[in-house]
Image (cartoon, rainbow, N blue to C red; front, side):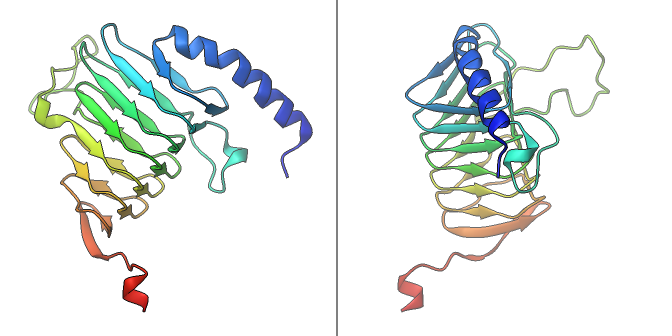
Length: 202
């Protein structure tokens, strides 16, 4: 049971944050539920769009597993874009884009999921504090289709497409495409089996 004082604090925080998020460059269509304060950092000439019914959870007491950080949404280079479909939910999730991250409808991310379409620095060179993030390639874009579930602390790397309805196990590293309607897990994530449908159970 959430204490009444927590509910009051959340409502006040949400009322204060929503206009601030819009001022930061977030485009919000319809309802947005904000539990705790997310970190939003939008680079000039980039877009972050959220459709109706998106939920951002940045407080541990509102999730079964808790979260180790707030939701983080960042675009890191001109032209980057993050698009989130209706009814999707994020708990302590990090989204970082240099190119494009497209998330479908009703996508659910367990605690502390990381989704990034960049390596943040050249692979063959040691990073330096003043080194800019390298430009992305269109092939680095990430697509997560409708009704995907990403288990707690899983990681989705650049250039990946995850098919509709797929379930990714906790702690997995998704470094290549996954088809729709499967259970996948591991590092790198591999298909374990197809999801059972109502037809399979008849």
